[in-house]
Length: 248
Ligand code: ARG
Ligand code: ZN
Ligand code: CA
Image 1 (cartoon, rainbow, N blue to C red):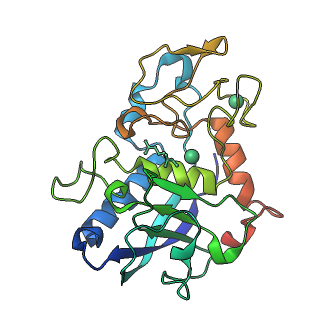
Image 2: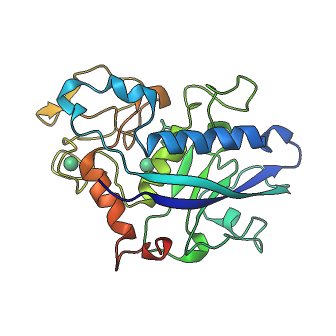
């Protein structure tokens, strides 16, 4: 077993002045925090769908998220792209708060069909954190009135992006069958899997772990991290690790 790591979270909602729906409600934000607390503590009910072949690898990261504060801002910008302007007050966005000890999440329309993006550990503190589109942030399981877009309406975009923030690569290692994700217990994959693959889905001579949060499937079709991913992710908080300042 491992000690619980508690991560304060600052959520910056940066909405377009003419799109009040992008200024998502406190309840929608809270529904996302609840998804993170389930997914990173193996409390998500869909974890039970994990095929027997992988069941013993499903991990409880023992990481807990606590909403510290929500920052709301409106902007005339309609799309923010991925150049990190949303993370800077000077550039019309919102500066990160306590990034050496906290996770900052920016909720804004990225555009270009991008659901979210993340900064890996070891980068600049000024841009540390993750960015998620408002219609992908939160869970429709809590309320049908939230501003959410199926099939990415179960909060798994933030789970996936925080996986990157914790140093996890995509399940296919962003390359073909010869490229690994540096995690031994995630089977090889030659590329992303989309939509909602059945089991088994074979590639690279093995059954691929399409239900891993670090693949590209629909929210309802991803529901687990592995023990190997847990070891890699928690190493960032260890003494000498890039996020050791989060743990006192
Ligand atoms: N960075 C990925 C993208 O924008 C996020 C994928 C998240 N997947 C999901 N099922 N929510 O395409
Ligand atoms: Zn990704
Ligand atoms: Ca692997």
